[in-house]
Length: 247
Length: 266
Image (cartoon, rainbow over all chains, first blue to last red; front, side):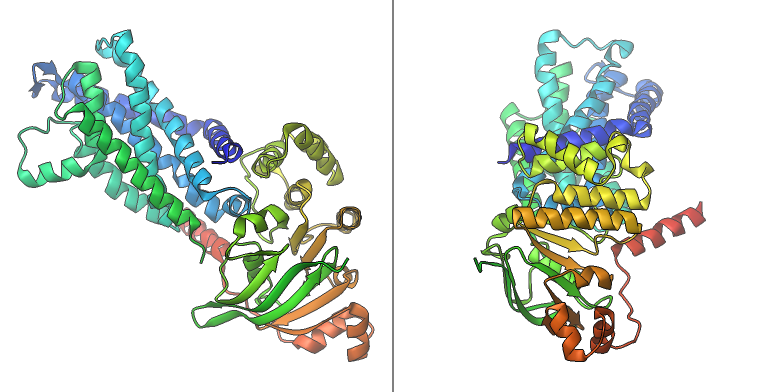
């Protein structure tokens, strides 16, 4: 592990992120739209587990902001390749694993912060999260962000163009979000959908967030954690292999 | 004192049917200033990319500072500095940040990092601009910053891939003085590619590559005698002919086309 390199990659990505004001705007408007429009619009139609729909989707909207921000953050890999900066990193005497870990941590940090924006809406929709729960909630958010970023890294490392990434990420982000239980409960669903949902890491992330905020849960705690941790390990491993490849 | 800095044996790199580098061999001594000349698309940059561990050769062997570029890339990376032909700065960062991050990944302690940054910024005359975002720089300023960055960590072997392209004569002169001075003082080996024959004249030895093969390699004086001409420029034209070469469109050009196409759509 090369901490200088991890620190450098993390710091650089964060500096770049916060210089880009437009991106911040997107990360605030997205959850507002979903919470207000979907939450208010569908509240009359749904009543899940005796909980109002706005409350039910709240953890899901946090997960949405996490996955969007995490995946988008990994575009920086394609960006660096196109504009040459990746070569500066690749000829430096730093292990590839540190490059990947630095990217994973910077993406998770950015996504975590965007998750916080949504969390700030909690009082407005009258969700009370006890302070004690919040201590666990924040690390959970970071874990989910980390899992999503590691997946994004694997996709971005194989992409050579921005268009390609746009297409792939739409094929990945939207289904992952919709098939994660973020928008509807996953207990009475046809078998084939259930199967996909159980392969989706975001399902377990949403499950953890909802358990922490609303006390509802579908899977056992250890299953949630195991799936998320193993999944991110596999993704980071593939990411390191991709970065180690030289043509 | 005849240590070998770079040794290349039978090195080849094929991209599909194209033999970008085709069985080249040469040795460069420590502290030597070696010029690698050739028309566009002759295989210069491919050779540099192999030597700096970005590409794996199809066959043959390359040792840099005594380390094999394929089996021991990390040690090679520790030994080298490189100024790429294409830009490789982070344009969203300031000049200072670019240099500081470079120092970090080359593990310069923060005190040394600070003094080195001051030194190289003064060398390229960018000290007053150090807190400006690189995107606002002119092409020449970016080039100077890139050169400053490559020299910052005092590498043992320095690769310069057309380093002074787009610079005015004053800056070229100034940067060359600095590089030569540094190379002599710290016994740095310099591997240079260039199209400027006056820069090639100051090299200890030059190798001329064409179509992936080395066509001649010797000191500028010997080469001029051999072809019985007055300048390296004439040597170059005699050896490689007078046809203008095509270079395949590279990544950057394709990106440019893509961005232009997108603008039209809007």
